[in-house]
Structures are given as C-alpha cells and as structure tokens.
Length: 252
Length: 350
Image 1 (cartoon, rainbow over the protein chains, first blue to last red):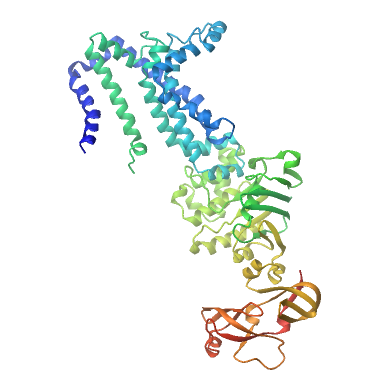
Image 2: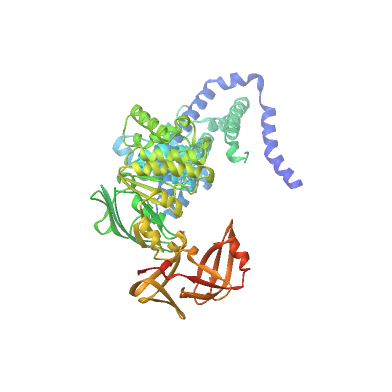
C-alpha cells in the first residue's frame, strides 16, 4: 500500500511541481514570444511530418509483417520495435552515421542532390519518425493481424480487388486502432529530444523543436518560457490520453 | 455455363478428393456429416482455399489448375458466395452492403444504388436500406447477404449452410425465399447443408460427401430412396443393411439372412422404412419369413408414436404406435419379436 502510494507520488508530485511554478499571468506573452512561437510551430510541423512518414512507410510494413510469411519475419518484427527501447541519443548517433553528410546513405544523397538532413527540418522529422514510427507499426500490425478476416473474404467473393478491399473493408475495420496508434506515435514525435539534438542539431527555426527550446531556456535561466512550453506539451499529452482513454484505460 | 471441379487438397485432418460437374439445370445440394469437407470444398471452388491438385473450371475457363500454375483470385472467378454468417460490412448501410459488389466492379454510384434497392425490395426488405447491419435481425441480415451476392449476377452461386445461423422462427420464411430465388436463378447453384429438410426444399440433385469423398450423387428422390451409406440412411430415416445376395435371399450378418422380393446377385444394400417393422410378443405364425427375436436397446417415444432401436442377429430401428408399446409392454432391455415383409425390403446393388 505504502509502496503503491509512493508510485503515485512519484508520478503526480512532479506534475504539481510544474504547475505551481507556472507563471500564469505572463503565460500568453511567454508563449507568443518569438522563439517560443517559432519552436511550437516547428514542433507541430515536425511531429506531423514524422506522422506522415510513419503512415506512408510504416503502414505498408505493418501490413507485410501482419499478412505475409517470409524468412526473417520474426527478426524484422523485433528490429522494428528497437527504437522504442533504444536510448534516443544512440538513435541520433546511428542516424548520423546513416543519413548524416558523411553517413552511409547521407553521403550518396548529398553527392547526388546536394540535400542534407543535418541542420534541416527534414532531419528533425527523420529523427522524430525514427523514434515514433514503431508505435504506429506495432499498433497497426496487431490490428491487421487480429481483425476478423471474414469480411475481407466476403469482399473478395464480391469481386473486390485487394486495393479496393483494403480501402473499403480493412481500413474501416482497423480505423479506431489505427487512430490510436497514430495519436500515440504523434505524441512521441512531439516530445522527441535526444535523437533530434544529436542528429539534426539545435538550430532555431529549422531543428529547434519545443523540447529543445525548453532545455535551452531552463539552462539559460528563461524559466517562465520553459514552464509555459512545458505546460503546452503536458496539456497535449493529457489530450492524447483522454482521446485514447477507451482503448488504454479499459473504460467500457 | 457450367462448373467442373476436381478438387484434391489436404487441410489439417481433412483429405478432400471430390469430383463434381454442375450445370445450370437445377440447384445442387451438398450434404454430409460435420467435418466431411463440404465447406472446404465450397471454399476451394471460391478460391479461398488453394488446391493441391486437380482443376476447377467455370464455363469452360480454367480458374485453378495447380499443375498448370493457374490460380485465379476469388475476385476474378465471377462467382457469388453466401456464407453461414451474413458477413455484412458493419460500417456500411444495408443498401451500401448490397451495392458493394457492383461498386467494386466499377458500376456508377447511382446505378449501383438503384440495382441494390431493387434487390432489397426483392428479398422483402426495402425498409432496412439505411440501417446498419447491427440493427438487423439474423434473418434480415442473411437476406441482405443473399441480395448482396445475387445483385452482381454471378455465373456460379455458392451457399454455405445459409440457414444454419438463423433463428428457428425466421428459418422457414428464409428457406421459402431461398427456394424461390434458387429456383429462378439462371446460373450454377450449389448449396451446402447438413439438414435434409433444407436439401429437399432447395435442390433437385443431392451430392453426399463423407470423409472427403463423394459417397452418393443423384436426384433427390433417387438418393433418398436408395441410401448407400449409414449416414444417408440415418438422414432420410431408413434402415440400411449391406449384404451378399443370392437370388431373393440376402445374407446380412453372421447368422442372419433376409428374404427380399427382387432377385439379385453379389453385394447389395437392403433398406426399409422403420414403420414397415411389425412387433409381436410371441413368435408370429404365418407368411413373414424375416423374423427375429431382438433386444430393445433404446426406446424413444415421440408423440403418439415411438422409435425403438433393436439389436440381436440384426440391428434395426422400428417405428410403432404408442399403443403398441404399452400393449406389448415394451421397455429398455426387454426382448420382442420383429418381422418385416419381403415386399417391404428394397434391395439394390452396391
């Protein structure tokens, strides 16, 4: 009992600590300050970009993992979840050696097109996608695998092509689970710090997302801005939780 | 248009080897015990289960031939399936469900709607067009599923136990609708069922599948009059013995020989109706030559009649009046004399 209470204290007390230091009177002006506003807008852009990457690349992978048998599937399924447990800083360094200017693929891309991810918003998106995509893939794969396949069979006998079946039968059937996975993935991308700062850098307007600015502000004594931005991220997280409560908190 | 299938496949315990040719003359019912492979056979025709060997062709077009590396997907076979459960799409209205196959084939929205509406009307459900499948009763849902399969006018219509998941109360009405629609549908029609009443109502030709093989195939009247397996005999409620004939005398057991009306030679089946059996307290005098003293193994009263399973030199089911049961003071474990007239025994070659 006491230990359980300890757990609650460990989770709730920091929240209270955060809320009691927020400077409510200057909240709006803190948030509309130029660099805070830029970071928030960039965060929205980066997190949505990461979500788009996850949907475009992650969904097909989730489908293949769920519906096709091939050698190495179990290994691939394990690999996909690696970023969920990998320290983000390590992820950032790994990204650097893959997509950095001197990286395995980054060098080729730079030589061919002059494009670089580092110090570029696309780099921040890539870093956020790296850490957040597994949340979408795992949720989507589970729902593709566990859904009732009898509707798809019926659709096939009615003359529906695989693409038509996917669009009109499979997708609607897994939509709630997919939305939950997407929300979770987006929330994770929004909070991404370690991989972003290691891989993409900390350039205001390009790669300095909200968590990066919070860190910088707290280090440099701009406590009010840091707290205001933290409050925004906290509210977004709570919003996602409330949105997912039926799926994650077991409410009927 | 016709369907020709030689299906060879193994699936779990099942070893399926069924040859079947069906034209569009009349509906065909496939019957057989649970686990015999009826549903798997249907799924193989539909392309939902791959063949190991054999060939399936629809109207002269080969849709599957493992040896020739041909395997058309279900959506390319131009057939319609009604499953045991309605399998409607939950997120679509009843009307959108019916229109689904047309839309999938590229029919315009308006035309698909109009044709779907006409079909909903035809299955007697114009009022449910905008309802979701969850709001429909089991019988209504299965009607919508039937309309959904028929609206695309498939060359081959496959029905897998279409009444099994429907409430008893709605079943008779749905069976009547199915009978009507199957009768007038101009394509190949195959319905799988384990219910003899359903088979008799829906089809003219009966194909019996047992343990993955066709054990009997013929017109309904032929099959029901001349069962060739224990399962078919039970289904149609006849007694069935297998024996060796020598003229009108048939040896049906180690110490049992029966006399029939028609002379035959070699292996034969002998069948007779349970109500052709007469029971006596003492050994009957007179002309009946098929007489045995048997033990009552089971006594099942059903209304004003009773069915008795009797064992001894031969095993048979007798059906007598409730009056006879009390008159003969019959009870489980007792003995009784049973006789059957030679003219009531139908013998036919194996």
